[in-house]
Length: 236
Length: 89
View 1 (cartoon, one colour):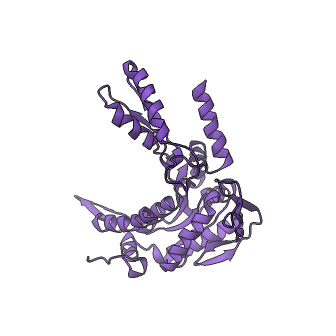
View 2 (view 1 turned 90 degrees about the horizontal axis):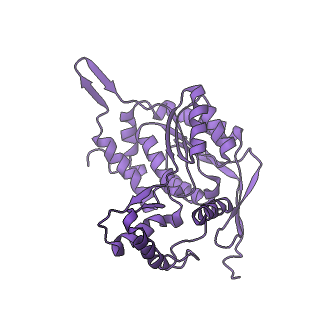
View 3 (view 1 turned 45 degrees about the vertical axis):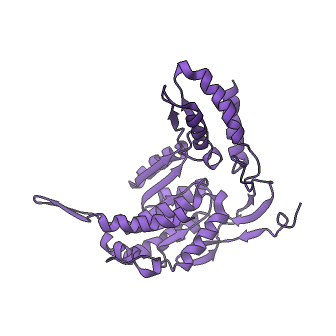
């Protein structure tokens, strides 16, 4: 929540430093807000994404329609109450909770929306780009990653492996930036496997309220099944 | 099972449009499930296209006054109501 609040201050600082008008010779470029921004956010870091996208939109002079993940409805409500208490101007931020194929689809095809910022899956990102083309939307997509960590051949495994695991299991592994792949030098593969086997004991799964637990339950049954399919793929 | 996990189910039937919580036009209800124990902890009424169009219309109206220029946005973001430190600090 602190990070979620700080992005507004960061946006303010950025805005003070950013020249809104730049000139070269006889050319002058002036930055202007594009209009209504449609902000579509994922469940994995809900309040942060809501704040980061809204702060960017507001800093640019846009107003916003937000479609948070319906799975994050409770956190969205708590976040919204903070904005209401901060006396957000009327109409600046509008939040509709609903399904992607209903609310998201309407935002993407509506001609009164000028810009879409979406964080989520590659498949939905592609459909947003395709369907947004009909009304020539400006589109910013941040799509699912499978970010690899690269282990160098002189790495100290006692340090590198626990760090790599901590990054892999951040947010129970439910993060675009989670380092869920590890690229290791072939000649150290056995040693790396042994080190992982040893270090993984420090990352038990269980009740997330327990501070010793590293991996809590997946956010939904669908996500659980997706992760199980990855585990099966790994075993095969 | 303790009292905490048996607490009342929260019901949310409104969207935030044009500065107010307004009842959903969409009627579909979704259960919110706590992942730790599979319990239903909230019921949310989901928006439909009509709710979405109302939200977009509100944002469009607000843009007419709010979005005159990025310079205007600078002032708005820095306003004390937003916890801003003001433009000169």
